[in-house]
Image (tube, rainbow, N blue to C red; front, side):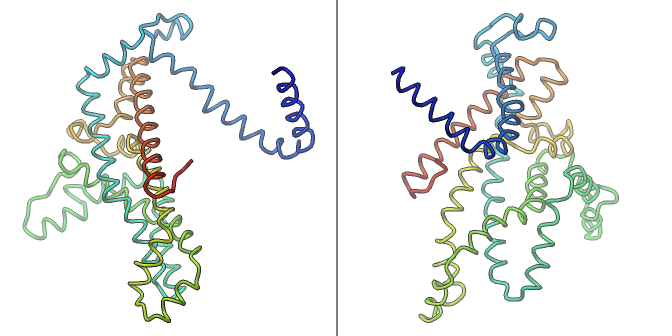
Length: 309
């Protein structure tokens, strides 16, 4: 066994010496991952401690899973976790198909100039700061000067206070998120469509297939592996909802439907200084995300033979 270990170390050293330039190029990425992704994992120990900022991680007493027990008995956390799943689930249903539809539509545009202009228009919101987008949404939905409420008033109806009514928060959040990101996300599917062999379309034209039939029978099946991979990633992010955007849009009056796990962690940890409880919430969130992506990957691999790993 020692002999095998010695041989393995010798092979590694030979590789390093032979390809040292490549490893040198890789070093900044490895250092970044080590410092900003792996080193902070040490702080997860706080989730199992009665953490005191004055004692630090080394001096704080261990409490086992007491923080998790307290977390699951916290009504605000249960509400936040439920809102996270609901908002993400609605996003999966309504937002996930939009980039696919956009990519299919762009692929059908015959004029290259018209296609470029259309793509520019739908890509542009992605490059706008989330703060500016939130400002645009707030101004558009303003009960006194917002464009939407001006139209509502012109119809003889009472203005709607969209951002202060809990039932309106989710439609506003999901709709504006689709407007901001759907165009940019369609690039992945356009790249997949570009990889479809032109001979398939030529054969279909010879057989008299319409453009709709070619899209349904050739384009969609050809990009299905890409769709599945993106769906797995989206499922893995079900418990992750845009923290900055929600912080900018929600109000105390909309906590009922707008408060999510990330905002709960923010209020509990940074504002309430309950670092142990906030860390427990973050760790639980990460565990659920891992379970979701692992399950989705296994199901996809069995059903369609397409998976992330």
